[in-house]
Length: 300
Image (cartoon, rainbow, N blue to C red):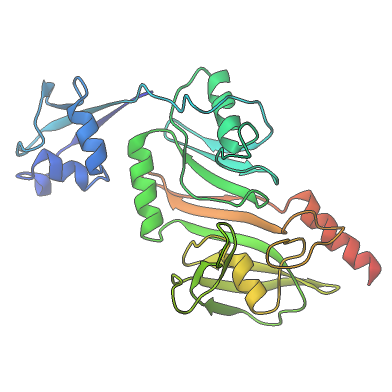
């Protein structure tokens, strides 16, 4: 993949070094090193330039970002997923249940990475697999993928600075009557590489804000906003306060009408990494969550 960018130097930016100018636009150290090694990676008014050079009035910078590598170790496999938005810089997809986002020891060819590799191959595109936000295997909904290293660097920085706003819809057991916030640290459960628990001693801070939206027979539909992004955060927090997710085999109880934890990445809001425009995407509840609520209503 090759992406070219052109920048006009403003009066306020005169005297800045090229490196400082680009860092202010989200170019990470890794991206700048890559550009230095790229033929015509950084040009100033049409001439190859060093990052230490100082900018002058009416200067124009041309950036040529070339990535020849792709995630070659990931086997392309045609698998179902939804494309919600796509351009030259990013993908927003709707991940189905039962699909891990990365290959692992027990999942070589049934992951979102495999599906994206096949999708890119079909479109005759090449780009490394870079997933910005993470979802558990059985959590459905919206994910952001960066198509090149500059897009990834800017989006990762937004994630670190909590500028990517993530909203989930969760079905939980019992009735939660009012909105609230859970501010409890989460750490690994002893003896497990997967399970997490509330851990006031060694855990990392985790904050979940929740609002009840709808009630049924022994369930509440919650809107959850994450201030932090710990592994299994919503599942651990809700189980800890006595409202586990139906079908959550780790933190709740298995149910015949819930084959997975009923959790959905409903909405993502972030600034486009290149044009800066604020973007918002919404993905409605999947069929199994709608069916669980409908079946419950019938038995009331």
